[in-house]
Image 1: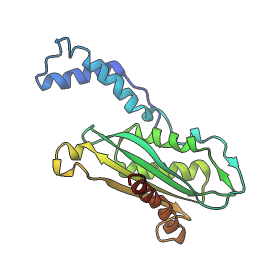
Image 2 (image 1 turned 180 degrees about the vertical axis):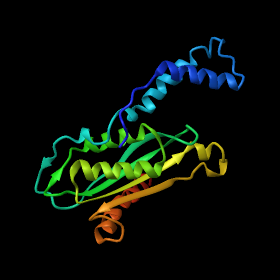
Image 3 (image 1 turned 90 degrees about the vertical axis):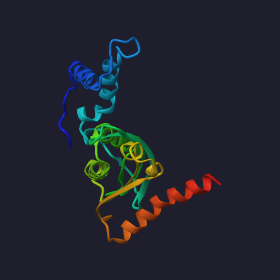
Length: 201
């Protein structure tokens, strides 16, 4: 999990100003003079997950008699690729097996996605981090996370890839790859794709 840190927005704006001027962009024009500050303010939101840890928000679990798989599908995220600082975005679907019936409100899963997506990221790492957060935060017996993403660093540089999706999967515990429950969880999450095709008919 990331260390807590604070943003120096003034230093960020100064760096953005230097970056833009290196490309010969005139920042004295009325349309550009506020750009460095605006970019720094925007990225303080895009990178706000760096100032938060990925566990404390889980809080107390909800005690139930649930013994089967629980799935949360189609959580939307927007993140920034750490290699090119361009956006990638898509959905996160999560399935987990509660331990002793302990579950969490669905908003907790959205919070996990928000925190880990609002960092300079790799999709593969984000998938693993969300999986670990659910497992540790809930003490779940097993977790499967499936993330789909469209990466502008790919599509903006290669127009032949404008419809390309990247899919990453992380799994742990009783739902680890190769187990029967893993296959069952994937079928539940893959039903999401079938539902969307039906919705578009």
